[in-house]
Amino acid sequence: PSFTITNARTEICSGTATDILLNSTTTGHRINVVSVSYGAVTGGTVTGASTFFNGNRIADNLVNNTNAAIDVVYTFNVTTPATTPVCPLTVVNQTTTVRVQPAPTFTLDNSTANQICSGSSTNILLNTPVSGGRVRLVAVNYGAASGSLSAGTLYNDGQRIQEAITNATTGPVTVSYTFEAIVSTCTPSATQTTTVVVNPNPSFTITNARTEICSGTATD
Image 1 (tube, one colour):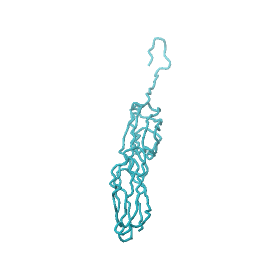
Image 2 (image 1 turned 180 degrees about the vertical axis):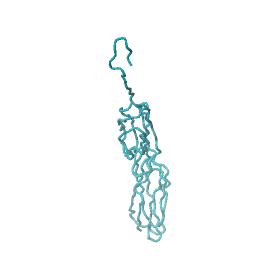
Image 3 (image 1 turned 90 degrees about the vertical axis):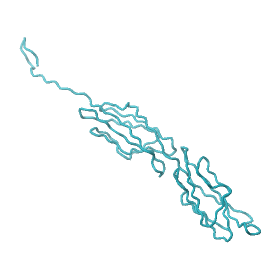
Image 4 (image 1 turned 120 degrees about the horizontal axis):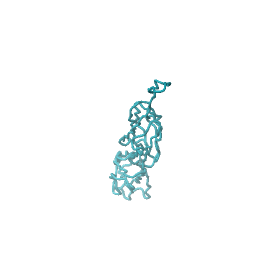
């Protein structure tokens, strides 16, 4: 007997289903699971006692709650259990692997105490514990202030946003940053937003109406 494995999703995101198609055209065949190694992945339904037939699919909804990708390995063979002897006399195994990416996650720490003076720099620390993960700037709203960043900028674990922001107005301006974490082609994490209030630098004017006066006369 012979069989084929078609693995349509060799890499999936946490919470996504596998798509493994098993086929055999041999009369009386049975496709057997020799072993399956899920590692720390949960949600698997296949065991060493599972059997399949031509056209069956494996749609395991796999969850990876760790911070690194995990390879799930399925091993199969095919036999004809109704024949005597059972064929083949020497069983040949085939394996297929599905890499399960972890869900993206991140934290941010805005250590500027949320307020800076015009011309000073922000200090926002971005961290993602996920292997291969990055933090993406979804949006930045400078309002009446001016800065240098744009949406789509990517940051690695441990990077800081230290950009000088200028506020040329006479009142405080709130600048907001919105982020999300990404890994591979998986759905991004929920967004998080932090704000920095940029206070204007104080200014003043002097108007001296009497640059020269006579003794006994008042200044103005």
